[in-house]
Length: 159
Image (cartoon, rainbow, N blue to C red; front, side, top):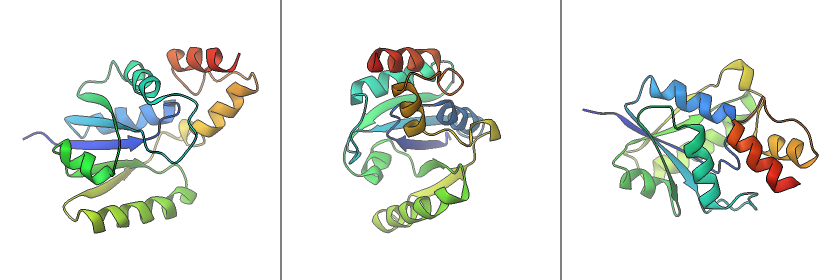
């Protein structure tokens, strides 16, 4: 039996922190579906298609990983993927309250789905997509925080 998990997010853009979590998860799960959310409630820098493609490029070398966009409720997407687990990352204590609230709501909507949490490597604990976008927008070097493809896409977007 294969154990599948869905790792959802906006991934605007996918960072080395995100990819670290997927790599860690791939040691535990035989199938990881990276679900790139279309309905984020946020103004995104990259389109859904671009975010999916950048995530695919960043994770191309990780076995058992699929990247797909989705819209609607996360729990419906998890069911459609024939999974019962949601993978989320906790960078700091400040993430816990928000993640706890999301996890509790998802459990209320779909009691058969569980959330599990991993922490990224300490080297990536401070990285967020919003900080990376801001650094790139202001002309800074983001090469330590994202894959080369993402760095190139950010440079193209902000020049």
